[in-house]
Image (cartoon, rainbow, N blue to C red):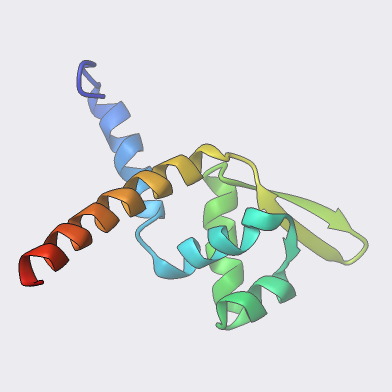
Length: 108
């Protein structure tokens, strides 16, 4: 991104992706799905919130192409459709970890 000129539309799409990851429940859902597909009920238990709240966030992640859904009878299973989302999360986590270590060194 540093060497490329992005169009206003491209910048808007990048901002939408960051906005998608700005909600802790959505990050918890992504973290829970790292090991494989889960149902809404399993995700509700994993993130410790209500089923309607989980469903709302799943729809956003699904609409953004980050997740995919597969039905098995009456149960829908969600899984990661765009694993590059974890690269972004790892970059942010690594940056935060380095910053926290640096701050910890300052305060001994």
